[in-house]
Image 1 (cartoon, rainbow, N blue to C red):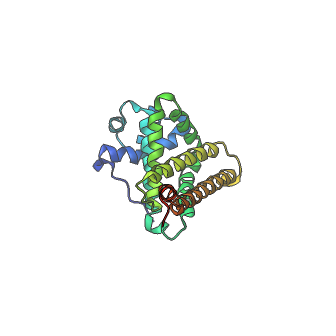
Image 2: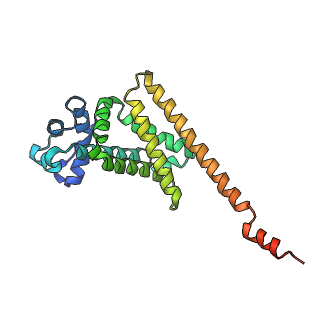
Image 3: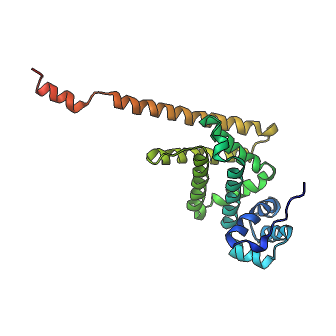
Length: 224
């Protein structure tokens, strides 16, 4: 089956950034996240280099990395919509989504390594944290999480930390099929599940505890 050519001419700049991002990532394996990779991606896609430069002013690495992460987010949502994930248990939903993201970049792990190095630079720390949060939020939403209280924040913070740690293992993993990475991921997800169960038990036990105020009141004013 022949794929329909992408019509870049009708795209907005925001759409073009995301569309070019996978080819930029492929070029970043060799050239790093820079203008050389951008122009190589434009050439592969058949996009006017001046338009590509307009989409990525000054070819800032973090802009290209952000667009690449957005492209992975979009691909993840297309492959694993909420209704498809709904047939799985919550643990498997999260594992499936993280595994999809790993598989999506398995052939360009050098680009991932270079991206992590850029994101680790002090001037990029705040934006890197924001991008990690957005991806964690996308995963939890697809997984069906509707929490709006503090659980909303703790879940995303934990998943973001697990995902970034897993990526760090991934780029240095020489085991067959990245087996060590997936074993690491499974252990970390098990940790989340145990934490959530313990938290639920604690909250339930708090509700079952007698009121301290009522207890002290009875000591002071015993029932007759």
